[in-house]
Image (cartoon, rainbow, N blue to C red):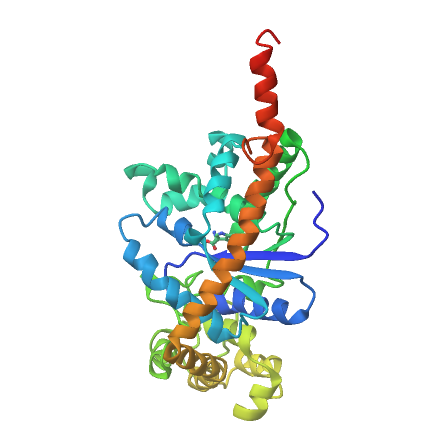
Length: 369
Ligand code: TRP
């Protein structure tokens, strides 16, 4: 089915507070998409059930982080009047759709999914045994996406195999049962900087277990500690006069992602822009201390309004619950309608109209036919 409305569905697993990597890679973009006016409908799913597929022994972690993630969304400026924020476990249609789609996918196909493959390794499931629920999560993600009739799915690159899998399910479903589901497209971050914000220690990704994150809700003191105490720069840049390297230097990776010429005017007027600063660093004579101090100012300018919003929403937590209840309500109507359409297409809507019971009665009267 061709979607004639432009509909976004995206989501996150609520396994932790959101950090700067999320901000640069997806949250900032979502706010821009929300404000672009180009989309008819924008939905953000907190995928708690998906998070449980590899956290079955720790539902408390998922429970706590649902509210953390909602607060992070609202704090960065996602506007509940413009986007629907909802929770996966409150949308039973998603589970029903998953169950039908599971019949359209082979285990061999899911086994080939490169993201699932590497996650199986990372989580030790290769040795311990692989939970069926975890193995099936790409199929449940296809249910998430199709239930909203999404045409566009903004995600990180690692999620491309899920969108590919979703497209295959849509094609298979439509071929088998008639044109019913909308074929979605992935939308990935525009540039390398957005795609990969390294951890403060220079490791490829921010991750809670490595302790190399800067969270949106971190205090100024913690941010300063992460930058001054842990941030990886250039190990060959020993004396200020030595030429420095930009490549692999986390301070510059973060500046690439966040700083503007205005930041230079305000905090480091020696340079007009980042290119000039980089040039000086590479030439030699610019110390890491100055660079880090500037980065901390840039980070604070980014994070302090987010922190203020978080405090405001936390102080009015009842409003946050209302926003979630309203989002869930809207999402439930939408996803229930898709499930009804799917069951109709499959003709398993036995009691919805008289057509199937009518056929039964005809069959019972003419058993030979
Ligand atoms: N798997 C996604 C992630 O880990 C989260 C997610 C769940 C999602 N359902 C989705 C993303 C639907 C996009 C669309 O980031």
